[in-house]
Image 1 (cartoon, rainbow, N blue to C red):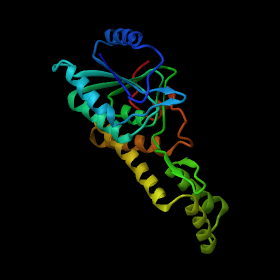
Image 2: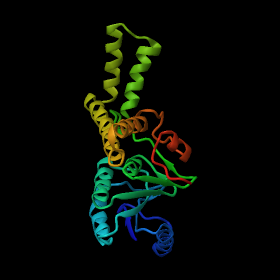
Image 3: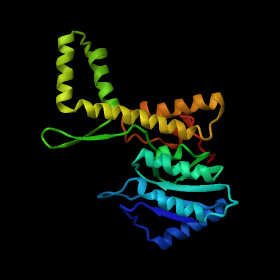
Image 4: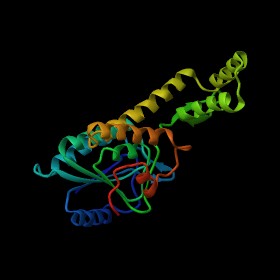
Length: 251
């Protein structure tokens, strides 16, 4: 059993008590356990990041070479999707059967990480989350604003489909106002981030969803998790996760 903690935060429960819980879980499940927890306390935030890669490698190397099954308990509000990809890729290179345990929350990049598992074991009160990436920009007045590419796309659909602006000069005027608030390069970066999120999610799902049907299913799940939610904070409950066809374990 190994514990990997994000360097930017610590949980409230002391390490000794946590290890006792983890050892009991490891004994019950009958397989090695790695725990990746980042702080989710207000004011003491932390994110999944590349600083955990070396820790994961160290813990993976501690597992008996003949062991092919692994549990990974994750608790995080998310972070870097490429870190999630790198971490799960390391795990999949070493183990043939991976279970991700979600006792409470695994949002955003943590959800992306979970997509690479053969099964996701969720507590009835646990939640996953959408994988639409959020971009933070500084406005001309110095204030910061977070948005997703889907926010821009939704605004444009509002103009064309509901307001029904079709006149070219009016359209150009509205777009100019949009780009006065957000740099066009940032909008492009937001689109690339959205495409990256879907791509990484699909690649992780494809690690255990094989064949033509599996590939098609992986693409749909990744797209739905990225595009079908109206808010980044929208929680994906156990029931919702099953409706999305995620690999959710039996209760």
